[in-house]
Image (tube, rainbow, N blue to C red; front, side, top):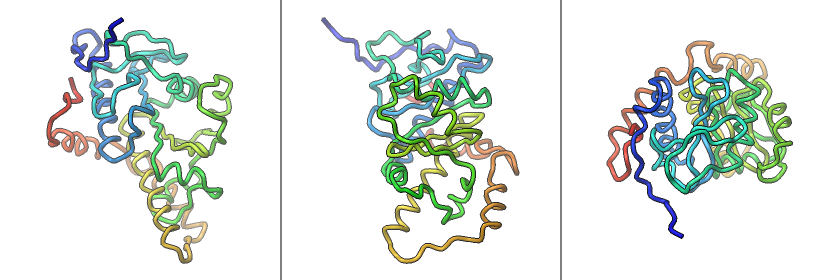
Length: 263
């Protein structure tokens, strides 16, 4: 029996609403940027986005494609329970873990428009350290008192884990999955990406600082609290609004080899 694993996908632009197409373009760009900044893991992990105007319809990647192969047209429409509503004509499907983790949060947090989950080297390292993320840099201070922790329960395929994932994330936009990796979310795709970029950078800096040895210095508690407050989304401006156009220009300037993300 022949298998259809072609990566040539026809455009769906005329088959979806303008709002959904815009979400598809931005989500595909997010996948490319996560890869561009060294946060992808072969074909694994997921980024999901809520389709505008829908309470329970999400977009997710085909399981089997590299992040640099994701386009607006090859994203899959699912509901929060993981049922496929529309996908390209391909034998690629979706990864169950994608909707166990993501579906739970989207279902419980209507304020969340996008969720990113990664298995980066630095993220996995910090997830395995008892103290977790330390507020040792300005970048990591953004998360002081504003990050959740979820204990490892095995590969995320158990629907019973959903309640505990949501509980441990709480009201935050970032969570460290113990012995596993990182997760961020946001009201928009742009905001979720900005938060993941900063969380990853904070983890990398901590790994470097610990490897360098010597004493680790921490600012006073009141400085940490004030800094964390100032770096919360919306305190001064929403994250992603200013940065996103620069990120799209970065993608547009990169050499070809893969289909453009906005196809």
